Length: 373
Image (cartoon, rainbow, N blue to C red; front, side):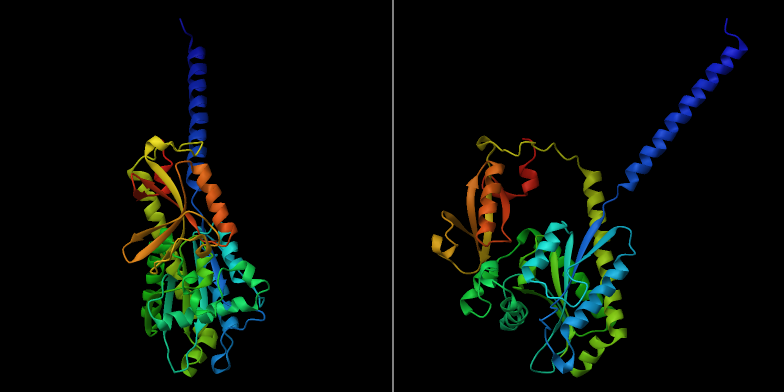
């Protein structure tokens, strides 16, 4: 027969076990919730150092872009879910390819580049650009002007695959990172809408342009032309502390709104479907009807798939999709092999090339392709 003392001892042991388990549960839950996704935002202040940008009305684009960029970063840094990385924090020259490398190296979730526009007239207003084919001659001229900084870089012919002053370079400028285009457009639309509405700026809308700095990144990326320095009234606004703070505050608030949307999308996907196991050796057998290709370019021009047109890459495939021709290098069911093709493409100059996946000839995401059949 169990004594009263034994009963108390057993009860104490059970209570102690319960408390230990409860503490472990709380600690585990806290650890789970503390592992939140941190979103990395790369902020790029256009121009810098020996590249002043445009000098409309006596103001320097490089100075205004830097001040606005740093102000945006200061606001974003207060958000516990956002990590801010700058391509420059002082008046120094940073090559366009390096700006993209900085964003790619930190695995950024988005890239935002700030600039000021110029024109021979008294044009004014705010515009936001994403990477894409030139919609008109004006967009082309803006892109060429921003890209012309390449000529100030040492060994630019080795770092880039075109001459920014050559009309023939249009083909080289037409690379589209379609994997990120939709998200880039969403971000650009948010920035354009909010900055125009809240700051009562003239709306020059969201447009596509072949900006080299956007071509170098592999995440959703936009370029914001804050206004025209060549317009005296707008130039004074852009050069004023109040104008810069207003622009920075609205831009930062919009970026936070975009990041919050990303959070909702992530939560939604996690809660609504179970992710299938990933094939650990990254090799898909041919019998699965999965193939991988490296997209190196996309253009409205029908380019002959000769090796001399594609930096000596052989067996380039051309596929027409809508109004565009897509150009692919490599075709294999082995993921490890397609990564070799990707490295080859980047080594010869196609820095923004990316892997595409197909199932029975239909394009699917690479993530889906790598799931265990």
